[in-house]
Every structure is written in C-alpha cells, then in structure tokens.
Image 1 (tube, protein in one colour):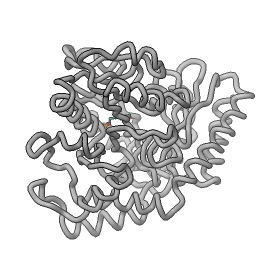
Image 2 (tube, rainbow, N blue to C red; image 1 turned 45 degrees about the horizontal axis):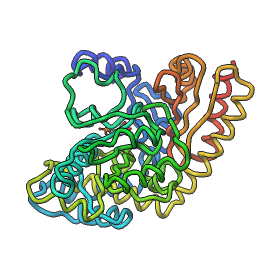
Image 3 (cartoon, rainbow, N blue to C red; image 1 turned 90 degrees about the vertical axis):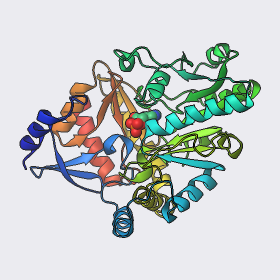
Length: 393
Ligand SMILES: Cc1ncc(COP(=O)(O)O)c(C=O)c1O
C-alpha cells in the first residue's frame, strides 16, 4: 500500500484521537525510518522515547524471534523464564521487587494502587497522592488525575478523588500540600511531555527528605527518561537518591509494549496474591525483548554515548541558538532535549519533517528531541545541519 492509501484507511476506521502526521512507515533501520513510498527519514523522536536502540537492533530482533518461536503467552497463572530473568535484572538494579504491565499508564496505576495499599496497611489509611503541575503520568483515570495538565482532564470529569497537584520544582509547595491523608509524592525527574522541564539539581534529593520527614512514599515516574536516556540507567541516580517506587515503560521493550513498577521490598509486600494483576503482564516475548535491551545497554556503551552525544547535541544547539532569532533556550539532560522556540513549535517540526528529520513538538513552544541513545556522531551532525537551517532561516 502507498502512504496515501494507508493514511486514508486509518482515517476511515481508527478512533480519531491522535491527529497523526500523514506518513505511514513501513521499515526502520538504526536511526532511520522508511515510509511506504520509500522515503528515508532521520528519526530523533524514537516513537516517543521507545526505540532507544534505534530500529531493528539485531539483538532485540533475535530475542523476539527466538522467544516467539518457543512460546508467546501463558498468563500469570504460570511462570516463564524470560519473565523471571527480567524481574531479577530490574529488581537487582533497583534493589526491590517488580510488577509487570503493558504500558506506562499501567505501571503508574500499579504504583498508585500500591501506595494506597501501603497507606491502608502501614500509614493509618492514608491514600492521597501529591503530583505536580505540568506532569504527564498517563491516560487511565487515576494517572490522568495525577497528570497536572488541564487540557488532558477536559471532558473527563469527575476525576478520581485522592489526588492533589502542586507546582513542579517547588519544595515549599509540596511540603505545604502534605496533609493528614497524604501517602505519596509522584514526580517525573524531568517533565517530558510538559516541555522538557529540568528541575533544580537538588530538587529530587530534597523531595526525598520531605517524604522521609513526613513518612510519605516517593514515586518517581521514569517512563520517559529512564533506561539510560539521561546518561544514567535511572534518572534519579543523578540526584543520589533512591525512590520507594519507580516506574518504567517506553524504552524497556525496545519497541515491544511492556511497563514495569519497581518497589522497595517492604513496600512491594503490600501487594498480596489477588490484590493486583493484568493478563499480559510479564509476557515472555516482551520480557525477552527487554532482556536484549538491557544486554545491549550493558555491552554496547549505549548509556555513555547517551551522555556524551546528548551533551554534544545540547552544546551545538546552544551555539545555533546564539545566531537564531527563533530560539529562546536549549535545555535537557543526555538524550532528552528541549529547544524552546519563540512562538509555536509546530512550524519548526513541520519544516524539519519536510527535510526528512523527525522531531517532536510539545507544550506548545518546545521542539523535543528524543534521539536513539546510540546515535552516531555522523547522524547527530546530519540532524544538526537540518536544525541549523530550519532554526536560522
Ligand atoms: C512520564 C510519563 N509517564 C507516563 C506516560 C504514559 O505512558 P503510556 O502512554 O505508555 O501509558 C508517559 C507517556 O508519554 C510519560 O511520558
């Protein structure tokens, strides 16, 4: 099928919630995507921070094929080796226990439910989750309520009880908001969807202290920035802290849907048999793909590349900003980068697309880059050449 045929067929039958760009991709290789008409695009978007090893990573492809040949599903009534091995790898990295779901929202939903169970058992029935304005935590009703952006709430009222929103990067506001019902603070280390908002360097550490003082759980949502994107496996490692719960999804499966909630053992113990679950959670194909992602991260110098190539991109973009009237700021850590533009991001994103470079617009005026973590210097320079043209013309 051609691009146009696929786009039209989609519009005829898919619920209209996405407002897709009218391009249909049929193949990917490394940092490049190919559309149905054979056009090649440099991908600095990674399907919203998912294909962090680029497209068709050989280790991930092999793992998926081998596992699909053997077994694709048994449910959580039984065990499989990839599920056990992935739980071990993630659990040991974090120092806790793991719950698998299929998406970011599901990982956060599990975190919220676990916090409520823990509050019920250990904190006198406290249940309220404090989250931040500008955040994005998902589209289920609970994660939507925790999401601090009105545009996502509109039309879905009443939202869930038991949530409170406070300004991001404001410790005093967080502390003031804590009341007799509060059980947890939920926060992104860097707000992704909210516009690549990087808080003060000591924000997370001091938020950890606030939670400790008030006996609250700290839930860190690393669905977008975890698994190496910031130049460390967990973004919270930059702050030298350990949350009580951390959530992962997106890049974990190398393109296969999987989400994970990791919790300290003493907190995880509040989930008991029958208290939570999902049919596809820990699916062996998804877990085999995730194991291959972890192998690649460990053996192929990917996280170090995310740190150094990300800094290179930020430095070069900051230099471009000096001669551009369109840029007001460049910010980010590692491979999550926001170019703050004067006016709307969309015309910039469209101009890049016309030059076969995929970037993303978010929060109105932010051009967001979520490149593959193993981006080469040559591909970084190719992207920068296009961005320079678009941003200085
Ligand atoms: C920080 C964060 N949390 C949660 C989610 C929701 O993940 P999903 O779309 O997989 O449900 C996202 C998605 O963009 C996200 O960026």
